[in-house]
Image 1 (cartoon, rainbow, N blue to C red):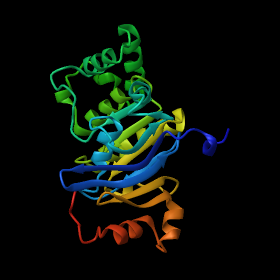
Image 2: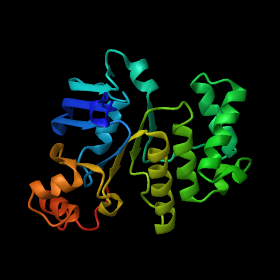
Image 3: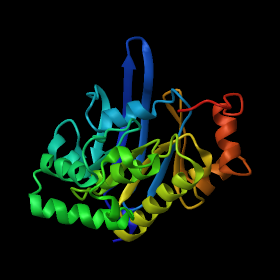
Image 4: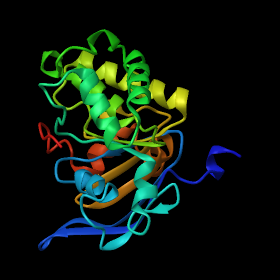
Length: 254
């Protein structure tokens, strides 16, 4: 079976959400294939975090459908969320616990036995090059190291789809590069699907799929080269700036 024939990791259809009178998402549809990276590009207020909150059922979706590997998140939430790992933009590690304690506590919430949890945690710490910090309290880590631990934690229950909400925001160039390297190696090695929300155009690679979200609407969706070609642009940075007015919003964060 080819990649194109597999069940999508994520399928969103006609999804809408409002905060009072303000429409955060306006009937959007998008697909994230299994085993690849889809970059969700958008400026501040585009609706990226709202989309993630709906996918993970922090909010109920009252308009539209969300399916994770075919499971409707409203009708079969346990089955859908079992396939899902998530790293939100705000840091959520317990600073006063060790790295290993943070990971094994999270594993327990997923019903993973203690011995299996420590084994999985150790394997992930090796992958993310942090096994030597397993006994250190999290507050001793750098921002980039904390992010790598959060991604490792999201992978403990072996999900098939990973959501990253501005995973590199606030990090220096070296730390950002390390996060990008680790995630892309994970996709190559494990064939996991990734939906990566960002406002940083340099994080997009030529072979990615890209969804440009602006003011609650999808303005472009497809492989990077196809999106560039369809919009008559010279590169994805030009398309993003033209469609969203990103040049005028220079300095904005998402």
